Image 1: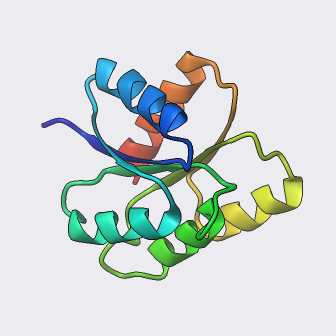
Image 2: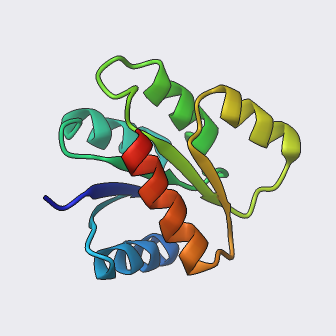
Length: 125
């Protein structure tokens, strides 16, 4: 069974690039432009999404707000969330960890680290 990852980024070019990178590794991907769209998609496909990979800074609904929504919603609270972001504020990182974030990947990322953290988050839920 292919693992599915929901990729959330307000820049289509970044979203497409990340989706393609993941597809080459054998993942199925869904894309969303912001947190609200992502949350709607996730709740509709709660059985088939194994991981949410989201940017932090986005209009409408930030990655952090999305993380909180996911963790507070019983139907999807078990889905691991990873931030893929240029954001590096330690307080934001701490708050996200406390809210249940699985991993924080800084852009630009090294692909070995990137895939290792994704694998790890999916395996450990």
